[in-house]
Amino acid sequence: MNSLRTLPALSIALLIPGFAAAQDSSFDPKNIWINPGFYSAHFDSGKGLENVNQGLGFEYPLNDTFRVTAGTFRNSDRRQSNYVGLYALPFEFYGVKFGAVVGGFDGYPNYRNGNWFPAILPVAAIEGKNWGLNIAYVPTIKNRLYGAVTFQLKYRFGTHE
Image 1 (cartoon, helix red, strand yellow):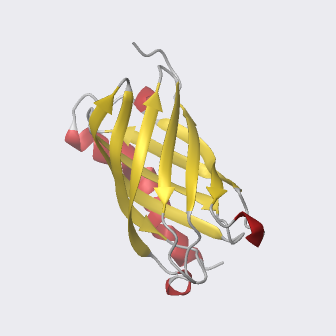
Image 2: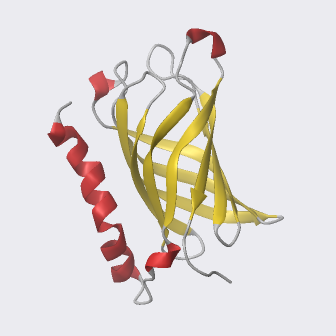
């Protein structure tokens, strides 16, 4: 694996607290959500794709609407992928936030030869005090990317009101 390819995601993951602090002087590390990757329910279930996409990701709220995110995971093609992005969740209905995540991904061999590519994905977020769940729709891009609905369980430490 080319270590330079992972540099952008790892750099952003390390800079999330600093970026957030620059946006809001009340930066608090207990607001960082941590996730172990996600589960993908693929639309093409007969293709032997990897559904359990283990990894490590971080998400930090800049305010009630925007969050920065970065991480790494084993993708559906059984390759290592990285991501960086910004959640925009401007709508809320019965405690569920709706919006999109805009960012970049890498590691998919059939899409740009595994190099970085931009993406915008519709997303819903359900969050409690310490536990949360992000649900995203990944569209099928023929011969490049397998579509799925993804479920990302997340946790944050500390006491939250």
